[in-house]
Image 1 (tube, rainbow, N blue to C red):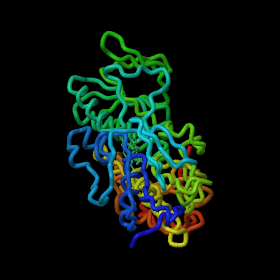
Image 2: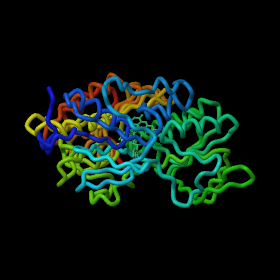
Image 3: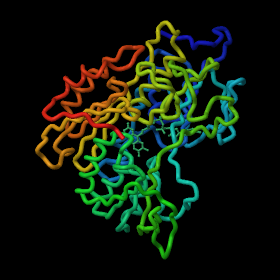
Image 4: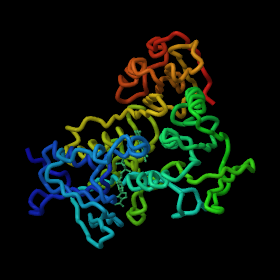
Length: 433
Ligand SMILES: Cc1cc2nc3c(=O)[nH]c(=O)nc-3n(C[C@H](O)[C@H](O)[C@H](O)COP(=O)(O)OP(=O)(O)OC[C@H]3O[C@@H](n4cnc5c(N)ncnc54)[C@H](O)[C@@H]3O)c2cc1C
């Protein structure tokens, strides 16, 4: 079945073209979904990296510690028959009225439908030296290769930022028998992603694994002295290192949209359906999308997660080619997992913003509580909003079932349903600071 792109004149005689800006998971998923839906027009993907779409999450895991080869991370493009991949080039401008994008090669591409999927870029804090040897950020395969090259001769590494990516990077570097210290301004590592109660217990494991940490410290200055990096903290101490890795968060990649007139105040604002408000033929997906998740009643926000990028990419494709009546509401449960230092961390739903947590230790007598297994249910105003588990995959599956059963237009079920569903040997409420 050939579908008609909404908003096109069937008699224009022009070949229908959907242009996808960005060849990450969101762009790849949108391309595949267009073909699965039977869209037979032209699908053109312009991607900034010179390589085919791959599993970016491996950059802080297998690709960094060497346990995965790049060829093992390629996404399957046989799902996207006849898609035209223009890689290693950037879109630099968008003119929505003319339905046209311009690339850095000077080419202009008219489109009938546009998917904005340019993701995010890592941000180096203001004033930090750029392009200097031994100063690293981690976003793509090229970054991993550069870091691995430098790690050969490095003994000591400072990782600035103790979120999920920073901790994964530190764990991979520790596994390579290098000394590593994480600096973070929070009360524990991964506080935002895991919540404080779980974050504190995981932090204890990370310390046990031999990774140094400096918590509630900010970096004042980073400079290079006699071939080493000096990282000055706000308590006046200096950390010396051969390499510095900045893992201090990401910014949505909207620099090419400055003149577009779209709302790009924090990513590209879109509606529930992934459509840009007031513009018929533009949809957004992935880490660049600021989207209101209808199932959870949350204000528009960005989700920097792999599964969400894929699900949003598919939903964006549906929004372009299916009539509204045939489109199910876009409802995504944010979720990710991370393996580090023998800890399997699984997260589902919304953790930050929660004001109460129920923590269940699977083996309460063990001192290594996170390694021994735990599950935390996070609540906001008495309703379950998120679940975090460490080394407890079965309990995680049970606890997330009620989150998955969320009603379409409301919040997750009330707390008591979930409290009783958790494997409970030792449960107590914990105030989330
Ligand atoms: C090191 C690392 C580890 C991660 N680990 C996990 C994890 O374990 N679990 C998890 O859920 N999430 C993880 N993430 C986050 C996850 O990878 C992202 O949320 C996801 O990749 C977002 O997909 P996306 O397609 O929206 O954007 P991206 O993956 O950022 O892809 C966007 C693509 O667009 C290209 N692009 C940018 N600007 C332009 C332009 N102007 N023109 C053309 N192309 C452009 C970029 O080069 C890029 O290839 C990790 C991220 C990183 C960096």
